Length: 216
View 1 (cartoon, one colour):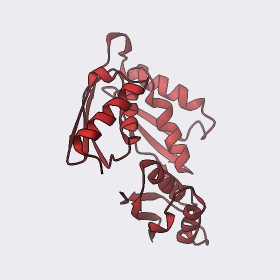
View 2 (tube, helix red, strand yellow):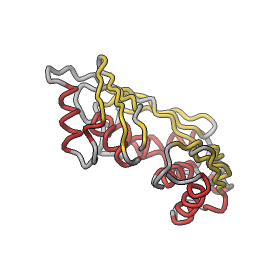
View 3 (tube, one colour):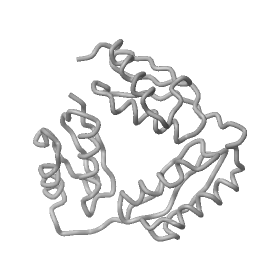
View 4 (cartoon, helix red, strand yellow):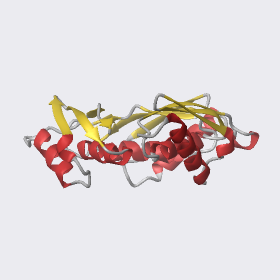
């Protein structure tokens, strides 16, 4: 197990390695294995990329983000401009119907609402607006349609996990309550964790996934 000092060095190095962020503006602190990112970034996309870079580091089990988005003058937009850009980019997406997602913007913070069929469509909508100029944050409140099916949702998810590249998929327990899936157990990395949650989201009939898995 890495010490806090080793984690701090590794996360700092990974931030330096990531070309989409300015690591000089981001401070890294580690307390009892929890990585704390603090400082100021120029866009919400940079903040998001910094969090993902920290997750890639072996030994990182939890991240607390205290990064503030401070838009430079050239990146500032009115809420109306951001909303218009968001609606335009969403309308160009082939991942979901043009009228499926609604946009509201307040102080640069984009809130997405509406209803889609699949989790990948919800993620595509958030990804589409994340990189727009002027955006300071994104809240994804898009609902998923409930797909009633006679298939065994729990068995389908368990089978998908066993087909995946997760090294110890048998250590993951799947529990179903209505249309909500809860995943428990231990995985080896953030990547394995993402594969497990994606497997759950990819199953018809699932409306939400609760991830209580821990990292080894």
